[in-house]
Image (cartoon, rainbow over all chains, first blue to last red; front, side):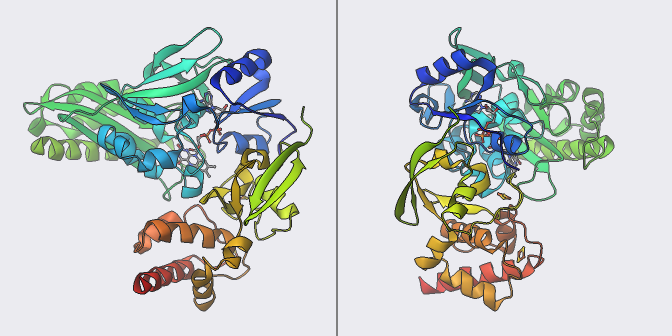
Length: 289
Length: 159
Ligand SMILES: Cc1cc2nc3c(=O)[nH]c(=O)nc-3n(C[C@H](O)[C@H](O)[C@H](O)COP(=O)(O)OP(=O)(O)OC[C@H]3O[C@@H](n4cnc5c(N)ncnc54)[C@H](O)[C@@H]3O)c2cc1C
Ligand code: FES
Ligand code: FES
């Protein structure tokens, strides 16, 4: 199908984006890569009156290595993040996730920020920024603010962004030598949205595992951390990690519901399989650390 | 204003200045310009029939607006055929029966060519994974993977 008619504004600067958003409010939508917004408009699930193309706004571009964080511009295309040596070095979890996002032609246009703002429950990047405790830098009519990934996602396709706000960039804490990371998902084919997935990071010090973050996706309304399972790993000696106990704790954290293709029960099993793989991988990585 | 906007897109090396409605997709724009090798199937990004190149990289013609491509270079299967960059793939597709109706073929060729530019000796799994966003309803994919694998070998021998 074709979208309904709309106005198109190609913004030359961040100021211009914010001015149009302030004037047009909820009639307007930001257009980044268009790889989620345009299909929704083609299917007429969305019919914004104005699209503000942000692809030319320099403030939203680029990947920058800072003191403690890697700053990824909202308008960085998936392919740029996938190929960036800075991302592989400082945010390996994101580098591991990238090849799983859609197909090459879609990664050539879709953006890092667009994926976060779209907040698809099955998307990889919301889980990654949750697991990494990243901060999202936002600007709008009431001024700039920075918010933790934990507070950004509100539900399926819902974030805390106001109608007049734009995501500018994401600050991802740089990985440290004592970190262990794991990413995996179950999907029917490479590039399809996952049926269940896990993005995780932890810290290993003197053989003990701490600061465990397990962020699951495609199992609920939005990517979620699993606090009971994290607790079951917290402070444990690597060789004493008990995969059975952790897997049973997951059932206390999340009861996935059925979606179009996969039952909740199957998703729970997939989450437990992924968790076992994570525990094995942590043990291996920790042994080398 | 939802009315037409003036844009210039370089299609296969030739600049075209046109007034287009913002909602016109790049795929529909190209077809109206006579480049009907850009096929339109699902119109929501899943089938890959509309694959073209924008500034040298593959993109979905159905998920890109013509107005977004103002000032950019677009290459269609007609352009890629004209400059010969996919000639070996085209020969291998015919030789291996890697097409029947041909609806998916332009997108398959451009997508396969992008893979071979980035990875000179892909495994069969890598070929399948790279082509996973392009649907073929006729061949069952096996012959397509055979053809791409054959061209990878030929290109490696040539260099
Ligand atoms: C066939 C297909 C398969 C896919 N598979 C996957 C997959 O496996 N995993 C996955 O994660 N994704 C997948 N995607 C989605 C893809 O990753 C998109 O690129 C991404 O979800 C949205 O990014 P975008 O830049 O295209 O955003 P757009 O489509 O331009 O925008 C999406 C939404 O975010 C808003 N927005 C965008 N940028 C900003 C900003 N800076 N500030 C405020 N609001 C903003 C827009 O207004 C819109 O509401 C798939 C898409 C397709 C078509
Ligand atoms: S028509 Fe564009 S992907 Fe199907
Ligand atoms: S040859 Fe008919 S769809 Fe592929």
